Structure formats: C-alpha cells, structure tokens
Image (cartoon, rainbow, N blue to C red; front, side):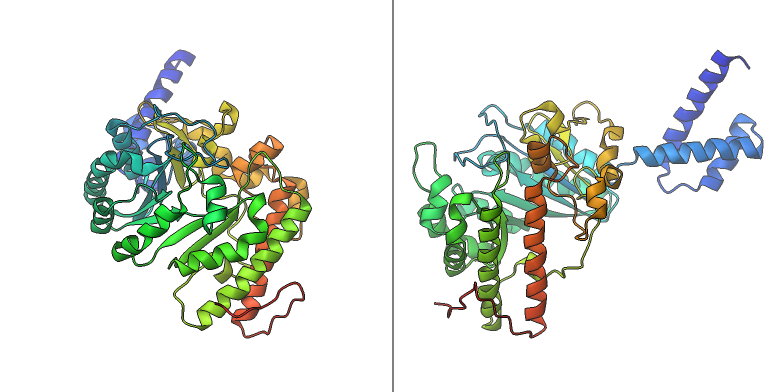
Length: 424
C-alpha cells in the first residue's frame, strides 16, 4: 500500500470510528477492536493499536457538559461601572436560532443526568420574549434525551413584573438578584442611564418576588468604596427578606490594595458573626462560603471550559461569561460559534488546568483553585496565573471558612477587631 493509499485508508478508518463512537457513545474498546479487525482485515495487534489511538483522540475531543450560560444580550438598562461586560450595545441580542443551537450543543454533549442553564447578560429580562421561546424548547429537547434541567436567571431586578414571576414560577426558574446593600451603596453604581437610583424600585418589588419565589438570593458585590459599610449593607438586605447571599468583591483591571483587602476581610468576619447569630434565632438564611469546610478542595481551576460553557449573543463560545465580557480576543478565548462549529481542542487548557499551574503555586501551603480566569487575565495577562489580589482574597475566604467552622462546632469566638452587637 502506497503512502497516499495508506493516508486515504487511515482517513476512512478515522471517519468510521468517529461515526461509530457518535452512534454508540458507551462503546467498548474491545468490541471496536473486533469490528476493525473484520472491517479492515487487520490482525489483533494492529487493530488494538488503532483502537487505543482512537480512544485517546476521542477522549481529547470529548466535551462533557453540565452547564451552559446563555448571554441573551450584552445590552442593559443600567450603567454599573464594575460590570464584567466591558462594552455594551443594544444591538448585541441573541436570536432564537442561536439559542436553539446552543441548547442543542448542551443536550448533545451532556455527560450528566441533570444540566443547568443560566440566563444572563447584560440584563436578560430585556429579552423576556426570547426566554419564553427558549424554555419550552430546552425542556422538550431534554425530555428526548432523558435529561433534567435546572434554571437560573441573574437579574438587576428592575424589570421584574408579575407576568415574568408567574412564568418563572411555572418553570421553576430561580432568580438571583444583583443588589449591593442599602440605598446609598446600591445607588453608588447601580443607576439607570439617566442617573436615577434603582434601590427603592427593587425593594418595593421584593414582597411580590417572594410570593412566587419564597427563597430569594442576591449577589452582593462589594466595591472599594463600600468596604466599611459591608455589615450595614448585609443587614439591610436581610431586613428586606433576602435568604441567600453571594458576597464578593468587585474585581477587574483595577487592583485592590492590601489595606483594602484587610478591611474587607475584617468586615466579612463581622458579617460572619451576624450570620451565625441570625441562624441561632431561626432566621432562614444561607451563605454557602460560610458553610463549607476550609479543607474542602475541588482542585486547580473551575468548571469553566471543562463542564460549562458560555455563549455570547452572536453565538460565540467561550469558557465563561466573564471572559466573554473582556475586550481583547486573546482574553475572551473564543473556541468557535454554535452556528458553525466548535474546536474542542482549544478548550484543552481549561479541561486540564493543572498543567498550567505556576511553580510558586505548587509550593504554596494554601491550596487554592487558581483564581478567576478573567481577573487573572486582566491583572497578569494570563488566564492561569493568579494575581496577588486573587491570592489574598482566597486567604480571606479560607479564614472565614475556618472561623465559621469553629463557630458551628460551638467554639466561642472573640476577636478584638469585631464588636458583636445585638441584631436590631
């Protein structure tokens, strides 16, 4: 067999193997070896070599998804300065064809019996008509594959109406509000394009929201200017009836100083003290980071690009939405488009991020997950090189977990920096 003939034969065999693996996703390598022996008249040794090469290549190209972030629009009705979408446009809107192709990608590449779809933006509720098309289509597609879907929407809350709440309740779609605290803190950045504050509008709607979603969560973003009001902001959100909190610093190209991070950590501990006091009183409240053990370690890297993907309004695919929000092509890590094709091999660094771990990180005594890929890139120029800021915030988080664990076990915490006051 000549070289050209051998190349043609090898390509033919590769096409057959890919198609066989697609039709039989749970195939046995032993059975594939037997089929190759019969189909191409190979001896057992050559058939096994070809099977081993095929399995290795198929595993590299495998995309086992558990979650999808659909960026329905990059447009927003607010002008938050710290938003991770750096460039917004009213024209960046997802159409149903793109949404359908993204959902099909998730369904075809799902490796788990339950998958999650997050509707995000921009402000996703600007595209409520699209949401009403997406949800039934996704549920029907999942049913055909015996998959279950959990839903989430991250919203600024200003466009919530009873019609939207009824729809979300009907399909078990959970809202996460972006709300930073009391009127002063929230109004510092979360303003309309006319410069109007939005806190009172959202606060007024919360009782209606809780009629349809009794357990309501918020993402409380802490800016450098809000460090010293963190505790009071937390209290005001609790007083509004918020049950679950994600408390996180506003990170990006502009770095926090060590002094600011120290103040952030001390105020987070004050919130921790109040959190445990509230729980002891039976207040329905939950902060996941305060309930985790300090030694819980999920490994280097996050699920972005590994079991989760983000889709831009135009169909571009990236490991996560925060990367899509960056301005440079290198930072955004576009690996394809749902309307054309995706190069799974470009995701290899995210599927196996440990190979990119820095030597200094390997020697570090505090095992972390490597920080946010987007923040890393903005501050160090590399997705897998944590900035000092990310490292310091990790230490703060771990200390909070450690102290929370001591409190759960009944240890009497006393810190001269923390004044434990009675809760209102």
